[in-house]
Image (cartoon, rainbow, N blue to C red; front, side, top):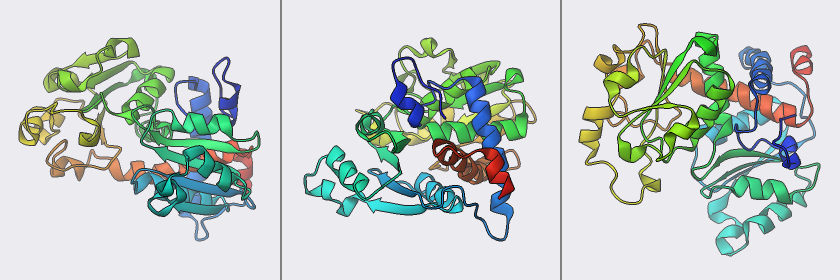
Length: 323
């Protein structure tokens, strides 16, 4: 099960944030995910761990990668998967979020995967469901995106090994990024040697130093010697007012080009949680280049989400390997 903060026992039944996970707990999840990688390489890509369980993907924001990889993960674990189209659901007719969840719960749902534009929505639902029902946060407002954070850790570990030797640079719109928050908490828990955030001052949190990272507004110093570069999308939909002069100027100053990539370690890997805006935060020749691991991130997301779903249901990695 997932570790929980003191006074938050309900979190032990759910997966809501990376903030309450220790390095050991993260390592166990990543080890479990490693055991599921081979499932995707089989002719029949299924194990029976969640046979008879019902998982509802309840997404109130548009998503391709996250929703699809959760659906594939659940199906590979042999669960029954229901995807709710919120554009035609009862919430569009005035039904409250909790009433929607309670109606779906009455249909014997075992686990909810929730994405919502409001911070705290997944936690609210987790506090309202009965003890046997689990909740996974697939992204809530600007707060957290913990499964993306862990699939990024899984990708880094596969390519780079020991976090204690690594310098990781997270570049772009850190202020509005729930992914960045989840990444920073996970990287810190894993003992990463140095975590940097890089971007214009207008896109860095005011109290960024309290996160245990080093802030840079200059790409040259921010990328110098980095082992891992994680580019972030500009989240215009969450910005109040114009926080950058123009898209062209932003790319000129903070876009990842081959010239800027050369400032990092020669074996540095390039990551992006998606969706990716070519020519805005990253050049196409970098996104498609030999140091890019952006597509492996997507593949790894299936195994990591399988691990989280299986662990919440009480299944062990050993059962997964034996099936």
